Length: 111
Image 1 (tube, rainbow, N blue to C red):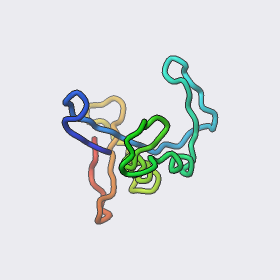
Image 2 (tube, rainbow, N blue to C red; image 1 turned 180 degrees about the horizontal axis):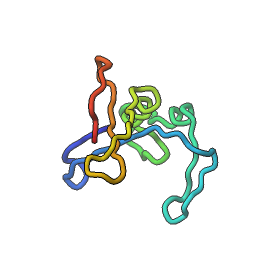
Image 3 (cartoon, rainbow, N blue to C red; image 1 turned 90 degrees about the vertical axis):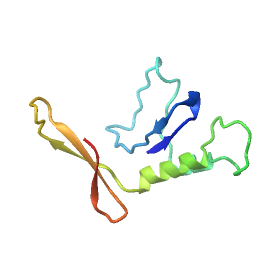
Image 4 (cartoon, rainbow, N blue to C red; image 1 turned 30 degrees about the horizontal axis):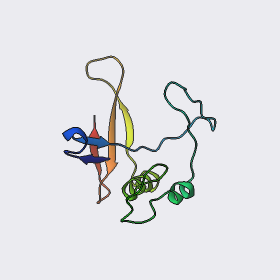
């Protein structure tokens, strides 16, 4: 999760990257949403890193160092786990999300 203030259009920005497990290897593209999609290995993503810290060219097809750090954390970092809980008002159950802090204690992330 990355949170920034005052960037695009003077607004705050929350950027979330999650690791999910696919049900199948085949990607079904909705042409109204995406032109293309593909599975990428860690090596392919790392090969697309910007050439240097002072790079000023086009970012098309490249991955910034900050995004690379977020990708690595999603692949290797602490996981957020979801637990189903009964809804106190009835109806569908709620999800409680917890993650590990530096001391390996679970903390509430969202309810």
